[in-house]
Image (tube, rainbow over all chains, first blue to last red; front, side, top):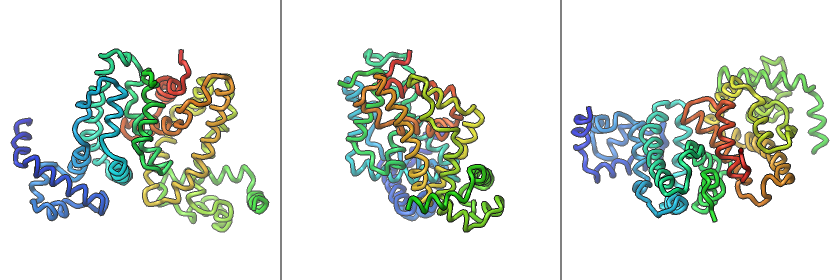
Length: 199
Length: 199
């Protein structure tokens, strides 16, 4: 099964894959998830629908992976030597314009989950789980350094804390999640919950 | 303006108002927000549409107030003498079945906000703001008792922390937000962020 998957993947170069993801994101921003069709993606990228389905299985997986591709590099590679440093590096990888743009995109997609359970499934598998894995590596280093106790119960609520910041900021406050806001939230909520002194 | 409002309100007794809210919630659970009509509410409660519009202005306000009416009493009245006690009392007012039922209802409504900006506006005005006011009174008492420092920055992120717990639990984990989960989150995240020792 893994071999077959490897063979299937090898048909596209990373450059071609990136180009396809960019086209998907452009279309998403223009028409939204519900109106996005595999036909439109195929037409815009001059690929066959068969190729798209072979490579990604369907629209939900293609969109989830395109979103993941937006993230610049792996957060697990940001090793600044302190947990606060790693978190700050994480939320300052993108400038405020990019954060606002991506938050608007995610807001639309979060709503599209309504009536598209396969999209939630794809998000969980290809976006949330891989990011959570990377968070675990960042947090694991903090535990190894002695910054966070291995049994700190907040370690199990990283997604809850982060998602709360993004969702409340964009949906309730209707403000963009700027770098300044995110750093302030990390210092006020996440680090204290993890028992890490912020000053 | 206030007098007019008082006169308008006085047409319905609290019992009649409660009966109307129950009918709205029943309909919401059966057909969802988008398919819910003022005609159906009027028919089921044997009231005129004119009365409904006079009293609530429209569907969004009626639904937001019906949801708020679900909450048993004011959380500001829960004065146990400690912040942890108040929070635990808050999340144990409803049993796990009721919490799960209401979470399912809120999940549907959160999705209905997509394409219904007036619903978000009504939620903000008639549900989130009043609840936030009550939280502020609970937190104000904790500050007065010396449990929380008045300048603790996490005081500004109560909604972010709470919403993160509910949204992640129901949407991402796809588990009901049980009393046990909520108390564990309060102890792991909210109280440490507020600088309140949990043991």
